[in-house]
Length: 179
Image 1 (cartoon, helix red, strand yellow):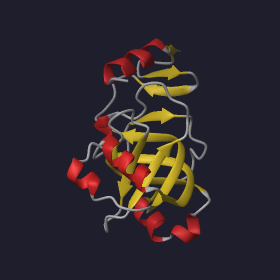
Image 2: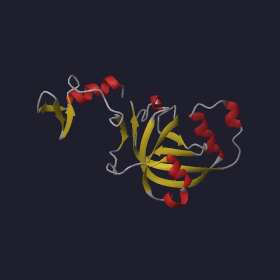
Image 3: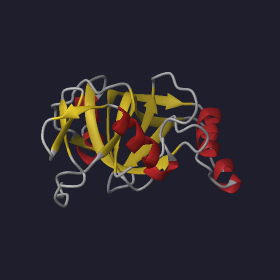
Image 4: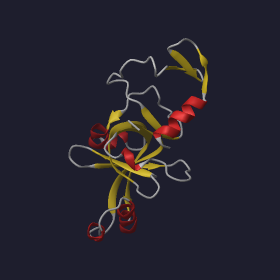
């Protein structure tokens, strides 16, 4: 959904005016953009994708912490944050985050989708995703398929030989900053 479409959708759902400075969307107050002050660093806007988040009041774990303590988090439903390093070019049905050492967390969206889920513009942006952390082995064919979907060069795809270990977050939902 484009920023313009999101603004239109938000405008269409405004339900009355509490004052000149505050509107409400459902039961959530929203400042009037004409009178709102400059945004603060903590006031980053996130675009939501997939299902509503279950852990909305939980502080997300940094991807470095999760990847550094796989045994502690494996099999658990967690909320993770990091920077998007790759997005599925075909449907936006997965994204990747990595830590400072280059270890990757593969975020696979489990919600049924039609069309694109996460936009390519999410690359390089901060993401918060939640789901169940799994460590599994993927086949050579699946690893090559994902590299193709990521738009990797054919020479890089051909270097993928044998099964690979994959650390995955099976996520029904994500929020991307600045979209």
